[in-house]
Image 1 (cartoon, one colour):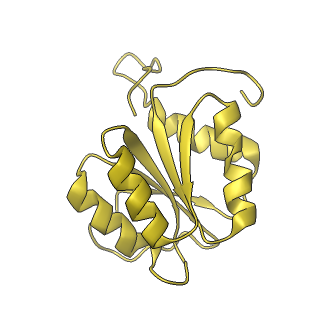
Image 2 (cartoon, one colour):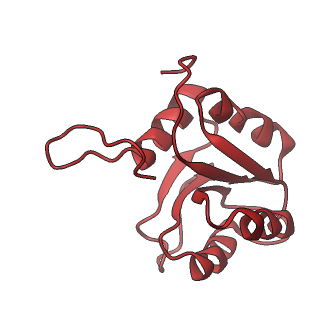
Length: 136
């Protein structure tokens, strides 16, 4: 899948305070996703409010300097309850709370694994076992 240019009706907000991770996740643009990125919780909140109607997936680091990923995710879920969340973390140990059903990708991850995780959230299997487009 990496390298194939497909267009998905999905907007992804990537939040990480490490510039190298933000650059790495830009790969999703080459996969056809519309991506906004933010290096802090404050930037993420501004980007989310600006794109609230189109943001479908939050790809967010668990550990950040000014606010934790889970705290920011809970704040954004209050603004958009159907927001899908994919956490990025070295351990993927999330605290038990309203975020238990969220997915996590372990750092360091490959481009292939990142795209696979996003595609699984964007295109969950339908009842016939086929992938649905535009589900994100």
